[in-house]
Length: 332
Image (cartoon, rainbow, N blue to C red):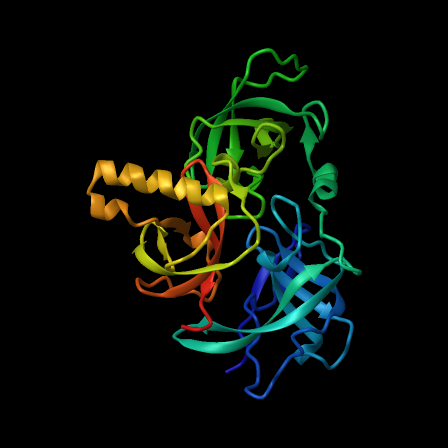
């Protein structure tokens, strides 16, 4: 069987052959230098689907002299990391085991992609300036509240605060698409209805007005860490055991190893939480000083199973003391 191809229409209406979007399958004996860095130029990148391909400058290093790249491997401060055709980049290589149909196959991908020399790929503002029509200017910011946001459908509405004088007839409520939520490159995992925000405003091709680059007040990305006022408590790592895990909601508790000494602020918060639990439930239950953790704070290779030994760093937020950078214990 030959390679299946599809025909797409360009913006000019001409037909073109579309590349297979998935990473190419690798020969079983193919290996990569995990520490090496390479250069190349972007062949194409689909910003809506979040992936593309790079032509590698160093010929013969990879099959076909091109490599697949996913947006999560782009080092960027942009709210919606992307690449532009022809952009010169630098990157490493990694081999992953991905599903193709019912089979797992070895695939090659770019990792830790930057600009040449290691610079962050921050190109969204410049691209937006070329393609969008702003109310006021691109750097103008307005304040308001999220009326509602549907995470599954990828859009919502925001209510503009009173007191802004604008030449354009901007309505009190305007739409916001998921791509305009600045979440610091992280998936949105919480409800943001009634959240106080700031944003720019753009005018669409149909004359409708929409929110642009939506953040928390002050320009802070909309992350759970920011909304819950997370405070890092050093980089020291500790060990413990997953005592409980809620699979569907993606969070659980870690029981620290006996004799663990935490930073003073973390220890104080654990004591307070344990005391409150003892009053609310039973004295025996309250004696356990547990750390809260989320799936988003786990390393990719951790299987969140009850009884699993793990290592972690700690933080404080509005919920209490938590664990982050949770990884399998090498001694497990």
